[in-house]
Length: 332
Image (cartoon, rainbow, N blue to C red; front, side, top):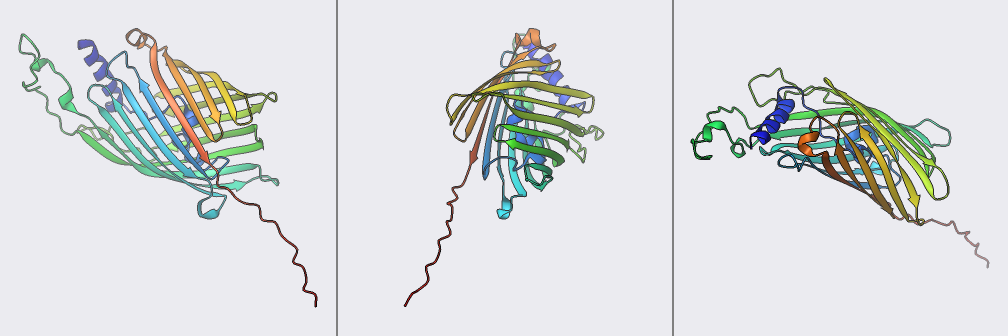
């Protein structure tokens, strides 16, 4: 229990007394609206639905669980260059059930920058709110030890002021997309989050704010052969004193025209390496990644980081082809 408390308060200290980092996933490539508001509506279809689930550090203490759901529209108001989306994220961490809930809505506008309309610049904006909460009653303190055993009826001797805080989110971004062919694509972008630098402490010190975040990302689909594609990807983000680089790639094997299999490896600097397996079937993509911890937490975690699942479903409306028929003249 003592070791768990040390780890718990160390993590809470990082989140509250310094500048906390935003919710993010190892499968950043399968969390587009969270990655960059300008990626809203950037897909081949009409509607996209995304689900993300992450379970982390189960071997250390109470697992850290993150769930994300999002949906976006490619052609809002029947306009191919106007896009919109909504995203919800819920994160629970540790014995205190330290929670983060986000709800964001985003809009994006695309401009073609090539004569054949296969290169686009997209700008996006996102707003919503974040709510953070903590359950102090789930924690154990030294003063609740009666000399023989732990007694939950004893006061913990602490004076907590708040158990929750809510603030407004404001994010923006820009992205470049190049559709060379159905299997040769390039996407890159730059996003800026927490533009208002909101206060995010539970305590009386109002100087503790959520740092602005700058994120650079890129990914590509590269045709190798009739059966194989290469899928490199990276993201690099700055938030306060934190620096994070995710880089890696996967190979995609087309078993049939409607079925493709994935396998790959990625690395997050000073934190973890992770394996990826996945499958495409028709318009559904599913990926599973598993983190192997390489940070200073490795002795406690036994190198086990977390498992993550990402599911992307793209819906395409059926559009019948209209054939112009020649109208025969009336003969008398």
